[in-house]
Image (cartoon, rainbow, N blue to C red; front, side):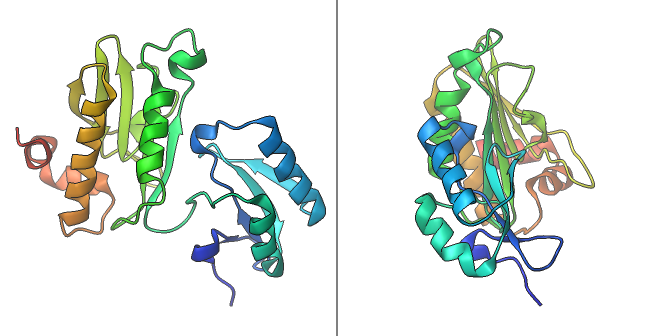
Length: 221
């Protein structure tokens, strides 16, 4: 019986014959040349439907298994980490780049985080989000690690998730406006998760420990 093909970023579809693949589009930010290339590849291989995903990617639906390798070669893009035990996605809102409500530059910070962590293997899947203000358009509070802009800097959340048992993340800490402090905190959380010996989602670990004990373990506070 066919299964997902992790190394090719291919997710088996409902028909149990074809696959969906999604090139990595950091933060959902792309250009017309990339969009044209995706459309040209879809036309070349008879792919009838493209799906804009919740992870800010464009998925090609109904791909034949025998076409996977040549499609990836023609796309010239690396797969988005849509499956597997890894950092699946870093969702980014427009922040101060475009949005009139943005108070911090979520695009710059989010792309740095994406470059470091996207597809990093972990004990379980992890999702991240960066919002430029507290309206949280990147669904920050439903991410394993979420970061929201405040007038003074950033607020970091941990342990959020959607799914069958949704959980709102807990506030880990607030920072100033600089990116480096946030990146250091994210690194601390990820390093702790790697070494804690649990294969649960981060939210279950935070629940079991309590946010104060988790904060002390990660931040030394």
